[in-house]
Length: 370
Image 1 (cartoon, rainbow, N blue to C red):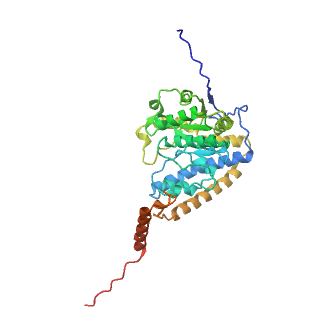
Image 2 (cartoon, rainbow, N blue to C red):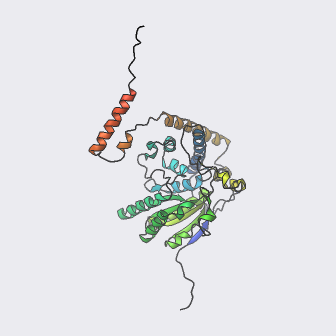
Image 3 (cartoon, rainbow, N blue to C red):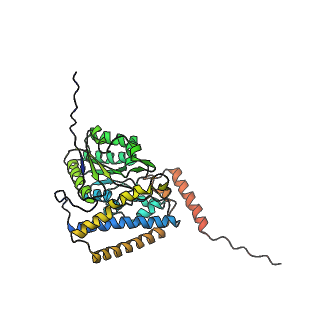
């Protein structure tokens, strides 16, 4: 038998629209209404400032361990913007900007990291799943939703997120394999931020790109500049149209960088050099998009001032709502089953009686006469 080079019928491309120094490829520039461009900028900035506020709350002991998304705002926001409200989005835990765009309140985001179940409460009418920290588990949730969309034939698609470290997990492989075999309307967005906690990308996989892993599942793969929101929008629009019209799933590698720590329980200086962070800072998606809007005449000092004031007010309200929230321990029972079993019903009553007793003031003790 002769030795032949196999022909693989799948595309593998790289995409960038807005360079790090602000140069625009006008042939690839997506058509986005001016009002949407301003709203996207405000959402990206709000996500960054929400991150900063949550970090302060955590350092002050007013919030639990927090996982910031600084530097990765464009990836999730570009995805969320491209989806229809009726489509599905399945986040990992660095999709703050995308969740804000989809209608999640800031205080709900705070409640999640504060350790309250209310932080998982999906807003009415929003087709999202809650934030998911266990690595790669959400990949199968997203694949399952996409399978449901195909079975219903409703034209909906599902986009799910994971990080570069998640591509080493079995859950990721199983989700992608199933999506490919059954040709599901599924977009897997891998936020390659170059670090899986303390494991660098080069120690995570020998593949030159993560996007090329798509070929093994019979999918198209696309590597996109994840710090360029315009490129993310172009990539997602193509992948969504393909999925919606029966063309099947796409894997998108959004190349980005984690400018902050993995979580507040982590010290990145222990395992990565500060010089590496400094190399990525000029590629920060926020100032890049800001310059793009300024060049288009859509953002000036006056508009910026209004945006800053609106975000500051929204953050103050969010912190107030978060800190005024009262946790009801009976919620442990209420959100598990549609109807409680008799033994759980009895346990809930017992807990409530205990809480009621604690609320009652202790009986006053009279002092004995001497």
